[in-house]
Every structure is written in structure tokens, then in C-alpha cells.
Length: 263
Image 1 (cartoon, rainbow, N blue to C red):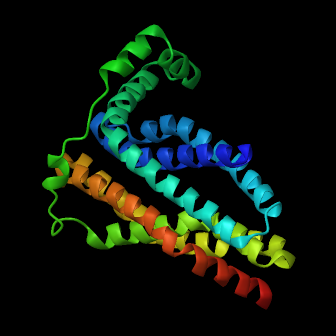
Image 2 (cartoon, rainbow, N blue to C red):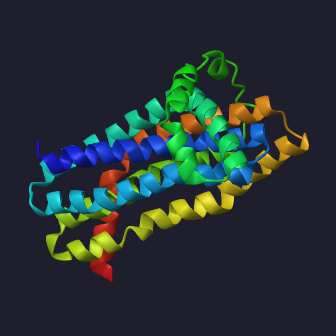
């Protein structure tokens, strides 16, 4: 396998892992009472994710341009999605550990108010020792005690659909370009067809509701335990949605090809 594809797989794993850990930011914000600071600190990881995306897409596009056999490319794209799903599952398992680390990071940043100092402290002897102490495994009761009747089922379903669309949003246009090489450039620019729908769902239905729930916890209208169960359910829907995107790749690619021919 080409080195550039190995790099793509690694970058894709990092992107999906960080995307999953993001679900725990609100929990830490609630526990510390510093929601804005929590998102500010998490921007460090968001920056890493965006850098990974910056390199991933060109590398994948370059690989597709040099390989015209669509069946082989489909295998590669499916493998990328599977790796995303695995990274999401790994991220779910790491959330208890990450919450503890992130909790300490938010408090440290609130005191020193310096991202560079926070990063340096993380890799200091004391920081590494604390990381070791923060290692924790998920408690199975958190999943077994989920009561789906009390969960915002619509939001969870919207999240599943949104994740599935976002997962194929950057892949389908590139694969569509391999189906119609003459329209490759047009296909790649049409990623907004898929990502646009996902963005609408996220902006109108998901983020506002999660924000309201977060404020309800702070105001005492919702218990932290109930909010944690919602977060667990959202992470579960992200995992399912990622794997579900395997079934959307080909239809999405052909939809993009259709639009590319029509415009």
C-alpha cells in the first residue's frame, strides 16, 4: 500500500478520534462551570484536527488521480470509513480518561490563562504523571442504565444522520471524480451538497438543543447524570452513524456526478 494512503489513514483516525472526544467538552464545562473556557482549551485539539484535514484531502485526491480502477478505489474509501468508525469507538472508550485530563487542563488554563504554558505543563514530568493517574475505563452501567424513553430520540437520530453525511461529505466528491474524470474538479467542489444538509441539521436541530441542555444543567433544571446519559447516547449515535456512512458513499457519489452533469 502506498505511503500516502497510510498517512491518510492515520490522519483520518486522528480526525475521527478528536471529533468523538469533543462530545465530552460540554460535560467538563458543566462540572467546572467554565463552558467558554472549556471550548477555548479544546480548540487546541480542533486545530490539530483541521491541520489533519488540510493534508488528508489533497493526499487522497492525489492518490485517486493516479489510480483509475474504481473497484479498487471503492475498497480504499470503505476502508477509510471503517477506520473512522474504529477511531470513533476508540474515542468513546477514551472519554472517561479524557474528561479527567481535560478537567485539569481547564482549571490550569483558568489559573495561568496561557495556552503555551498549558501545553508545556502537559508534557512536563508532573503533567505526564497526572496523565497516568487519570487513566480510566468506561463503566458498563453507564450504557446499561440508559433509558431511551427519557432520551431526546429525535436529536440522537439527527446526530446519527449528520455524522453519516459528514463522514461521506469529504469522500464522496473525490470518489465521484473517479467515476467521471472529466468532471473531477466540478465534483470535488460539490461537497457542499452533502455537507450543507449536515450543517443545517447540526445548526438547527442538534447544537441548539445541546446548548439548552447544558444551560439547564447549570441552572439546576436537569441533573448532571441525565446530561451524561445524553452525551453517552450521542457518542453511540456517532459511532453508528460513522459505520452507516458505508451505505451512503456510492449513492452520494452518483448524486454528485448527476449534479455535476446538470450544472
